[in-house]
Image (tube, rainbow, N blue to C red; front, side, top):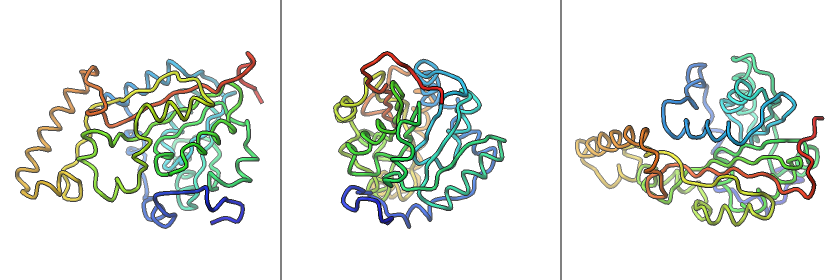
Length: 277
């Protein structure tokens, strides 16, 4: 761990060597499809982004835990933002930069631990939007992360948090190893709203999407249902339900939805909007 990182503040559920094994190569087609409109959850997210976020190259977005870069590519193409990402695994930084080049997208990928004091000091008040898509739930110090987001954002900047919802049926389709890597205590609307309210005004905070399905032997439902034929039957059943839910958004709930989505705007004491520098 870097010398200027607080040893007692960085409480991750997964060590660095775990993530170093996770990063694999991505082809261009896979990156394009990773956040497309084929499922309701993605369509809902795209609508929320258009509703709450401004557009223009004067706005700077930072994605925390930005590998493989597909979200940054999306924001460049659809919002024309100046894009930044931070990753603490060197291999992930290199691959994310390569992925941006595949789409001729210019951006800055910062290879640093998010909790590094030098990083936090250098980029204080530098960003207009911060995207956390699957980062904060891997840590115990959720309060500290939210404070850091506020420090990095300019006045009235936007925070987007998207995390899995292991409080419902989604948990059945995740492996025990995957669940072990997550902070289940923050996976509810009440906790997220309470912690963020000190620094942000809530714009949106709900459960989003239909079911996520995985009947592999490593998943919880796979461990419970040993018979392969029976397991495949349940997979087929849930896939059908998932397709139905792509068109029936009213079925979103803590039990059924795979995601928790939060949009917030930094609380400011004046009416200034964004700095353009």
